[in-house]
Image (cartoon, rainbow, N blue to C red; front, side):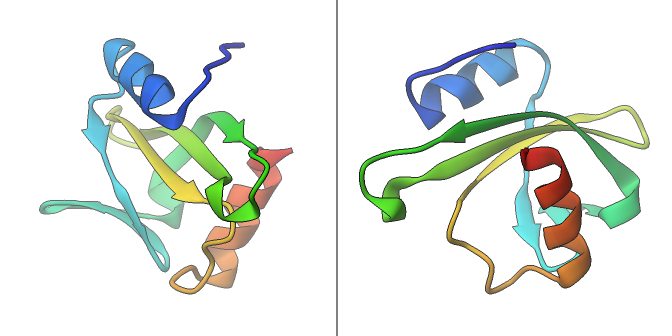
Length: 97
């Protein structure tokens, strides 16, 4: 298991390990340019949590692999949930613990 001091250090190291695509989470899918992965098109392989003194500064970095073998990573604030579907929240929560 890897440990990093900052979100940017984690993302940088994941990119060195082949997680070259940086995706954004949207409701029920991950999106990067024209690439879109629905909830069943990727599996989470690593979760890195960053807890700080202020809840607004807490974040999670996810490393995932798509069904096509693409390695993707993305980060989000722990408090973010507005644009997330219940299915996506469940998938992320299972891997967070």
